[in-house]
Image 1 (tube, rainbow, N blue to C red):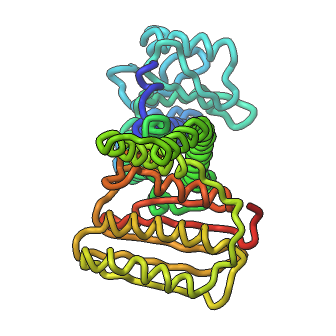
Image 2 (cartoon, rainbow, N blue to C red):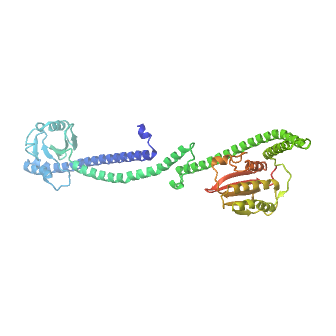
Image 3 (cartoon, one colour):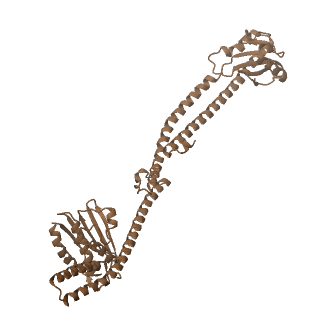
Length: 483
C-alpha cells in the first residue's frame, strides 16, 4: 500500500482517477442491471396476472359444462402461440378444489385426475398452499430451492370457485432479454470508459506535471540556484498558477537577498581591511619618517666616503618607496577641493589617450554633464582615472574601452567597460582588496583606493560581466554627500 501512496502524483492521480472511474462505471452498470432485472420480473408478474385472469375467465364456463377438451384448448393456446409478445409459460394446468388435475397443457407430465401432490415436491407444496389459503385471489409463489415461479389464479365467478389455474414459468425465462439489455449497457459503459480513461490520464498528467517540476526545482534550493518555471507550463490563474508565480517571485527575492548579503559582507570585509591597513600604515609611518630624517641628516652632516653615500642613497630610495606604498593605504577623502566640472572630463580624456593609443584601443566617450556638480574634483578625477587605467590595462590589443557619465535622481552615475580579460566570480569578490594579486603592474592598490574614496563619498562601486566578452565597473555617488 505504501508503494502506491509514495508514487509520484504524475502516476498516482491518473491511477486513482482511473480506479474511481472504473468502480463508478461498474457500480452504475450493476445498479442499472439490477433495476432492469427487477423491471423484467415485474413485467413477468404483470403478464402472468393478465394471462391468468384471461384464462380463468374463459375456463369458468368450460369447466362449468365439463367441456374438458375446450379447457385443454384454452390452456394450450398460450404455450403454442409463438407470435405472442408475452413471456411464454412453460406449463399451465388447472386443479379442482380437491387439488386434482382437471386439465393440463402437458398431459403426460400432469395426467388428468392426478393428485397435485404426486407431481413432485414443488406441486406438493403448492397443494398445501392452496389447501391452507383457499387461493381466492391472484398470487405468486416462490418456493425455496425451486427453479420455477408459480402463479395461482382462482377460477370463479365471484361466488363459486371451480378450481385454481396454475401457470409455471422457469426463473430464467427472462434471462435472454436481460442478457441483451445487459450487453447493451456494458457496450455503452465500455464506450464511456474508452473516452473517460484517456482523458483522465491526460488531465491527471497535465495537472501533476507542473507540480513535479515545482518539486524538482524546490529540491535544488540549497545546492544550486534552480531555474525559473516557464509561465507557459501552467498559464491558468488558479491556486497552482499562483503557486508558480509565488515560486518565481521567491527566486527573485532570494537572489536579491543573497546579492545584498554578499554586498554587505564584502563592504564589511573591505571596511575591516581598511581599518587594519590604516592602523598598520600609521604605525609604520612614525618610525619610517624618523629613519628618513636620520638618513637625510647623515648625508648632509657626515664625511662619508662615496661608497657609504651610495649605500645611504639606496637605503633612502627604498624607504621612500615604502613611504609611498604606506601612503597609498592612508586614503583620506576629507580634502578641500573645487567642484567637479565638465572640463575635468576632457582633461581625463587627454591623460588617458596616450595609454589607449599605445594599445590601439577604441575609446567610446559619453559625457552628459553640462555644469559643475558638488563633488570634490580631485577625488572624482582620481576615481575615474584609476578605473580607466585599469580598463585600458585589461582591454585586448585593438580592443574597446567605453565611458559614460550622467546625472539622475540626485546621483552622479558613471560606468567604465572594456573587452579583453574576463574575471571570475571569485576574482570579482576580492577585486577591491589591497595588494590584489590580479594587478599585473604596480602594487595592486588602485582599485582599493578607488573603493575607499567612493565609500567615503557615500557612494557605491560595483563590477560585473556585462556580456561574455566585456567587464563593466559602475559608480553611483550622491551629489553634495557628506565626506
